Image (cartoon, rainbow, N blue to C red; front, top):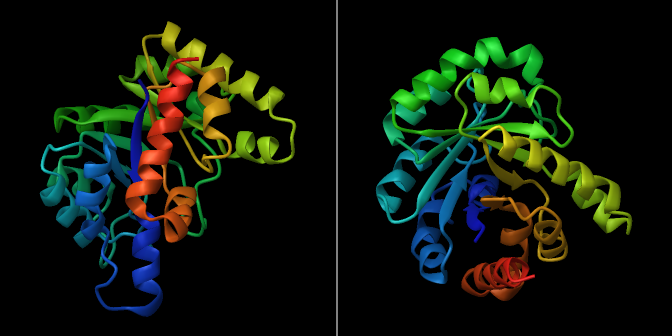
Length: 252
C-alpha cells in the first residue's frame, strides 16, 4: 500500500511568522506516527523560511528509525550562513530518503522537476554521495518527463512525480489528461526499475482519484493541504483521513 509521508514544513512557517520556538515541527512527530503515517518529510531551504537545519536534526533524533524520514532539497544550492548545504544536512541527519529538487532560492514552492537529459551528468556524483550515506535517492520530475532512463543510469532509486498540474486540473474538473501523463510516467519508471513517489498539492479531494489512476505509487508526500485541513479537524484525525483514502484506493 502507498506510504503516507507527512510534510511538516507549514508548522515551521507558522512558527517563523512570529518568531520564537512554537509551534515546533518536532512536536508533531508523535501525533503523526501514532495516527499511522509511515513517514515524515521536510524541505529545508537556504533562506530558512521553512524548517531550519536545527529542525532537521531535531526531527532526525525524534524519528530515530520509527518511520521513514524524507529530506527534500536542491543539492546545488550553495552553503551559506545558517544553511550548511543539502548534502551536509543529509550527512548529519541520515534520512531514509533524499529527494532532490531543482528549486531556486526565490521560489515560493517547488514548481518543476529536473530536465534529466540536461541534469543527469551533474546529478550522478550527488546520487553516489547520498547512496554512500545510506540514503535512498529520489529525483523530482514532471509528469511526461523525457529521459527517465537517465535517472536509472545514474543510480537513482525513485522518481517523485510533480502533481501540481494534476491538482489544478482536478480542481477544474478536467483531470483526465494529467492523470494519463502521470500514469504513463509511472509505468515507464517502473519498467526501468525505478520506484515511484508523488507529491505537491495532493489533498483529500484529489488523492483517491490519483491513486486509482496511478496504482504504482509507493509514497505520497503531503504537507500544505494536510496541515491546512488539520487546523480544523486536528492533526491526528486528518492523518487518519488520508490513510483511509489511501486504503480505499488500494482496494479499488
